[in-house]
Image (cartoon, rainbow, N blue to C red; front, side):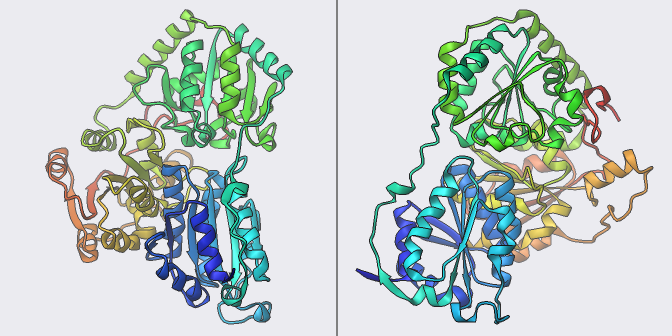
Length: 553
């Protein structure tokens, strides 16, 4: 049967199990939006206030559900507004399909109204992108897009569809989505597994470092079994947090520049570092020579381009982390490692002694956590508040943390919280943000209100760009160049102007009173005032090692 290009897009979205898309209409995608209108029963479209918010929402939706997020925008400024969201998904390995409109094929390359070569712009931040110049290519390209977004190391894909292609007719074959079904389970080589098994069995001080690949690969259970069998502590990259519940005794939390003391020190003192689905970013490693010293590094990852890119492992194995761990668990020998666990307990005691009980951000985060369930989705923006959440919010279930790791995109949080809330059946969702980050994309309050989403937004308001100010204090002699915001913004009034509930608080008693009775059909904004000289500790200076760790102000 013959269908229009727009009809083919909708048919392929449905075939790939897409139930929710995020986006913003415009002239170059009106034909596609007309088909969305006709198919509203099968595909729920969430209209955001800005295309960047739509991209972050699709990203958050993908993180919570494990499915591929879908975002749609028009041409020109609509497509360029997606760029930050696409880059964010790329660096955090989030499966995302971005569908953009463009001017009609005969007008391409003529500087037509709202024409942009979005394929060239996003080439370095997508796994695959393509402009469809012939409607007969559309079905195959869309299926390829969904396949590539999910296969191997997940990531974003962009399909640019000119306006006339959406109207053109061609034969629709209607093949099932089977050809886009991905099996990430790559076969492993027995020799490699044997070498890795031997190294692990000889270890006296094993440490497991888990990244986002564990969550993307649904290997949380295998991670815990490995830790239990080896009696090995587990530390995390920011993307790996939530793979194990916070109350698991061998969960040491995030390691790295602003990681937990015990996690960073234990990683440096281990003799065997088992790395699962992590990419050794500079914020995680610091001085690479010191990071790698006196230990055997075993790196298991779906993406072999990560081997040796930042840290060179002695042993590496490319493949699906879940299937590799299943095979590894059958081969390794159970171990007690009593002396190593005694050292871990000692590091935990030092960590507790270093923590400030009077740190207001810590107390705010722990107060909010007391009102949340283990399945509550919590999002952050980027900055000091993000690091405090990594340190003090006790995560319960996997896929409940939404944060911008690789790109560090301020303004990510509210869009991601919207996508995460919708993905989690419109349950209470938390966003911790700062006054700087929240100001970036607070317009998405309009989306949260219109969708009646119960998102609790806690602004840790220090009237500053907190991390730049902290660095200026530590490394720039207290010269606070443009990091003091000195704004008069009334976030309570802004929230109410958008139709949300707004509150101001500067003590825990007021905060607890607000949290006692939250509505379930509207967002709430709490502007919580904190001092502008609150700092995030521990801190390993850029390019430093655990030898340089700062634990007290």
